[in-house]
Length: 281
Ligand SMILES: [Zn+2]
Image 1 (cartoon, rainbow, N blue to C red):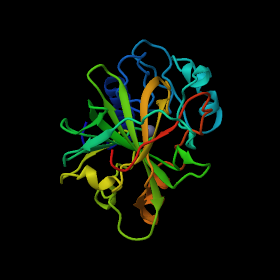
Image 2 (spheres, rainbow, N blue to C red; image 1 turned 135 degrees about the vertical axis):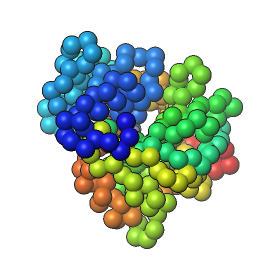
Image 3 (cartoon, rainbow, N blue to C red; image 1 turned 60 degrees about the horizontal axis):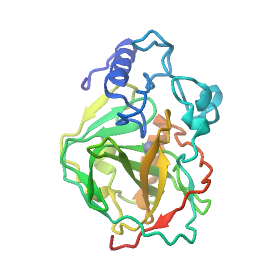
Image 4 (cartoon, protein in one colour; image 1 turned 180 degrees about the vertical axis):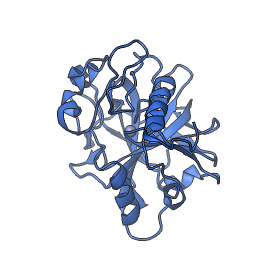
């Protein structure tokens, strides 16, 4: 499954194979303890291995976010869940102490993949974050346009999600808000390799310094949430960093050409608290 998909048919086959073996999809790639989302990477009338129609979903129209819970395939949590993501981040007056988060990312070549919903970078083992001392291994990162989280009602141009999993299969996602800004961005090298068709993968020739994709300050909003794509599984530890990183207007436009809209709208907060960590943690 390398730079291979030369025909549409091949691309479709690849998409199905990839989706059914690696379980792709923004924020849904490593969810091992919930019903496995069937092939979600194609918008075509395929079938999954069990012969049931594959789970198609999208960001607009009849299979858009407000319908995800009705599409079957174990997506019910998208509608019935009480701890759904994204949310509008408005810190309350919570007295609870935020978790201490440390980031330990290693430079590494990544495999960029267009899975029909996002550009996802699959990373080799060795990068992790710790949340209150507990390690979560980085699995992949991917993008949304525009941002999914908003801060006091205001979104940004894009959002980057680093998805991590601990030994028990629990997920922790680090979200980085990307703000359009002229000039050279930290994403320039990655953008040279964006796979432009569903099912395509591109291995970067050079190692990518993942730390450069993060802002200098690591203070962030923390809350209990979910995957932002079907099956919307809950139990995800979210941290969205306060400081934004820059993405150039050309890069945003190039991404928009691939995926014009890929953000789930903000969900009700219900009785969840949003904690704010300080810059030192
Ligand atoms: Zn995501």
